[in-house]
Image (tube, rainbow, N blue to C red):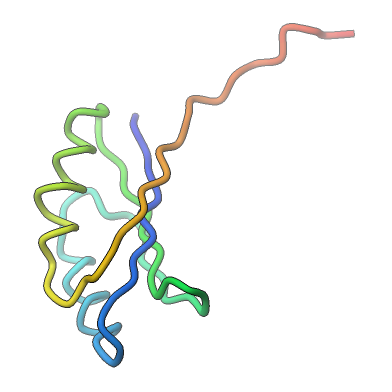
Length: 84
């Protein structure tokens, strides 16, 4: 399973509208408004990275009133090989 967090800066006053529309996108698991330089954090999941990238580039970034996004791709959890 591929995962990413997308951090969004949107038009002032349009946060609720953007959140409502993001929640309609398949693969979007969580959407939260935040107090920061950015306005919204979105957790996205897909069966592989290719589909995840398509959701982000073709759907999330196309939602109206979004100015900028930053995507944080989640890396697979790595097991510690030192078991001392």
